Image (cartoon, rainbow, N blue to C red; front, side, top):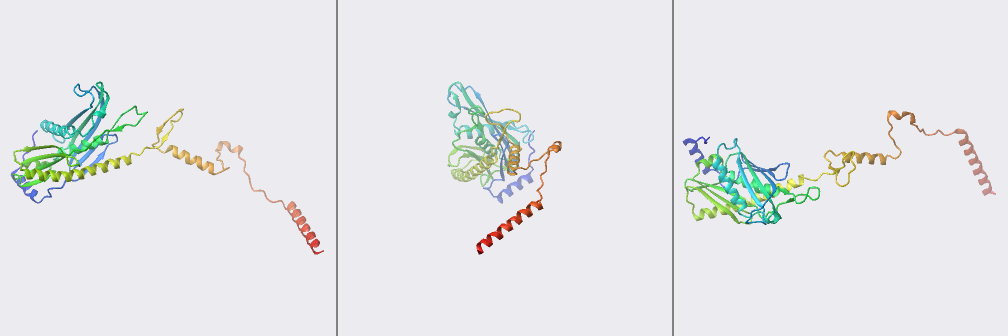
Length: 340
């Protein structure tokens, strides 16, 4: 199903609104993570993208027996963009050019046995909602998911999974041109993409190294326009990279390992199960209270016969009086001796 064409009034309204719009600002961006490592959600305005990273052991290519394999797959949800297979193929090629061809990941570290077993890293990007600038959202979600992913190095019982070796983070920044290049806009929405004359995508890292550049549309760009876009892209990439680093750091702090509690009824050596309810802490607190209370013992109803209640003994008047009188007589005799 094709998109509904815009009316002339709506087209004129969008072109006039671009003149008053802030051309260098991105829409509100939000980065969140799933429960598993390698799952990332990116919200760019109303555009929503999910990236999931997985790995498996495969046979390497004969031409590169010492290198792992990177595989990218982009799927457009029918609710986001129905029946647009050409767009998905185009985005897949651009994402491969941005991430795989830029050598941002050390593929040699993915080799297990040369010529026999290597790790294949698969990145699945799902477009959940399409409101423009899918390429930027897909590149941000893919590189963030790769930074968040952990691959197994040994069995989970012996060693924790390790992160991928990533050299740099290439991020795509899209520029749309209107009225034959008179107006420039960063991060166009879906309706603005319909009325634009041309599109320029620059993939760059925070070191100002251009990883890929691609132009589409029937507009001819000048050298000054491309240089201007590259300067804007360097500023936007540094801001997005800082946002990704903060999101990864916050997620790392949130994933604090919980204490371990042994399995009840099982003799176990080594680590136990994760304590998610705080059972061990409550038992320790009860033991400390019992130890600090001294001789206080709690007895149930079935043990009432064995209860012995100790009351403070009342002083006996007779022995206490005799003791006090003898003490007074001894004190009187000692005083008489001192006088003599």
